Image 1 (cartoon, rainbow, N blue to C red):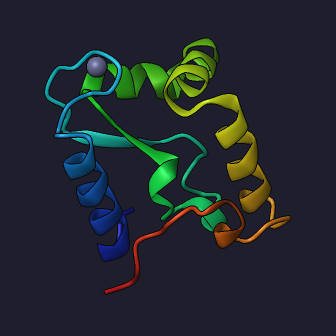
Image 2: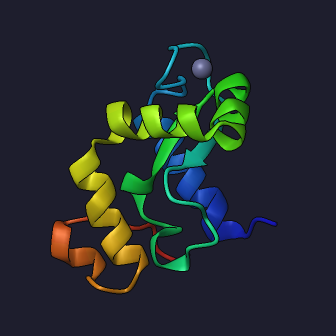
Length: 104
Ligand SMILES: [Zn+2]
């Protein structure tokens, strides 16, 4: 279930990525979380999302192997590690210069 903040997060990322899937370049109507959205500490962090076409979003959700590849190539392992630290509550969002969308 999405709230207004989720929608805003998604909109900002789609605009940032020019509404194109970052994996294949086709029109991308959705945004996937690198670290799952249930991890509230990074749910609204802009660096934690990438614009995806429906095919690649599905593949990303279903295939751990593909997810690992996407994280390595689109995000980078260092940034992934840093996001994980924020998600785990070991660091603040500001520690690595991440930004998140606000509530309104
Ligand atoms: Zn795609």
